[in-house]
Structure formats: structure tokens, C-alpha cells
Length: 247
Image (cartoon, rainbow, N blue to C red; front, side, top):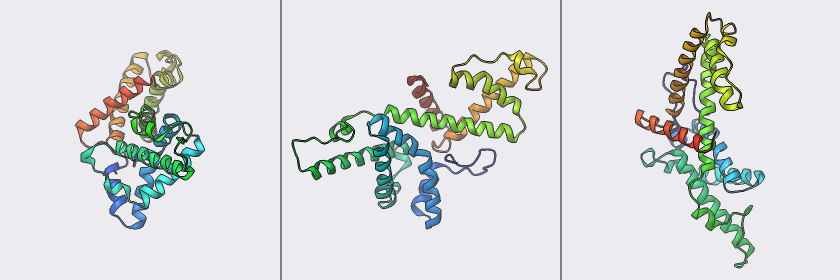
């Protein structure tokens, strides 16, 4: 699971920064496992950044990602240079990937030996990469992934604790309208399905569901943002990103 263990099952949660330490200082097997967990978390957003933000084809993006992982993250031990006191890990990875893309573009130009031919990969040149602003595509992909994992954790927790009523109300009244553009199911139609006795009771259970999701989201964000202040700041950023992208 990219964001560590399920919050209800993990007494000492594995944060992304503890994984960074393990990926740089542990034995070979432990380093590989830690690195795999980190990559599963961050690569989807980095891949979206290359395809939608830098306009690489899916195949070119995949090739570049594989080369980046091999030559930078593994062979040069990139994560050893990550410092949680200097900012977010995803910002560090994104900036490093863009520098890697610039180097890649320059090598392609040099290989062509044609100074008058500003080679581009899928229409994007090195100067454009260097001058381009922070990637909204990357931010949105990351925010969506965090929300999706929060949803999964909440669904799993509801199933494990026998609170199918909490999940059903959350899904029918909150999730489906947000993700699918449907109208919220009326409380009266959910009372029987949830094993409840009234619409008022169903409304109270939905309040519980909202609180559970807020707690779960904090647990997921706490996997990579350390400290209460950092978690709250990151959650505000996530909602701003999703609102900006109308997600």
C-alpha cells in the first residue's frame, strides 16, 4: 500500500520520511522494499506531470521515468539528498525530475550535432522546462491520489468495524455526487438499506462518516507531512488544488 499500513492496523505508522531514511541507510532488502513503497506513492503523479504537463507521449514518459529511477534514484542514491527540513519530498522529486528532463533534452540536441535545431521531446524544449512554473498537473494528480487513498482507508475501516451503514451513507450522499455528478440519494431511501429507523438517524450517521473521513485524511497526510501544523497546512493545500482543478 503506497501510504503505509491501514491506520487502524498500524501502531507505529511508516511515514514517507522514515522510508526515505530506510531507503538510504538500510540493508539491501529493506532499502529495496522502502524504495518500492515510495515509488508507488509518487510515480503516478510524476508520470502525469510528464505526459500532461510536459507533453511527452506515454511511452516517452515511461522510458524517462525508468531512466530517472535507475540512474538517479538508485545508482546515485538520490534520496540521500532529501531533507525534510528543506521542504516537501514531492517538491524535491518533481524539481529533480525536471532537471533530469532538461539534461535529457540537452543530450538529444548534442547527439544531433545541429545547433540550429532546438530539439524537443514531444514539443517541449529544455529552456521551456527550466522557465516553466510549478506543475499544476503534478499537484492535481498528487491531490487526487491522496484523496483516493483516504477513501480506500475509510472503506476498509468501515468494513473491518462492521459499519457498512457509515460507508453507504458517505458513498451515496457525498462520494457519488462529488465523483459522478449524481444527486445525493434521499435519506428516506437509505434508512432501510442502512438498518436504521429514521432519516434523522441517517443524518446523524452521515455526520459520523464525515468525521471519519476527516480523521482518515489526516492519517494519510500524516504519512508524509510531519506534525499537526504541517498536516493541516497540507490539507488546506489539497483542497485548494482540487478546487482550482474543479476536481
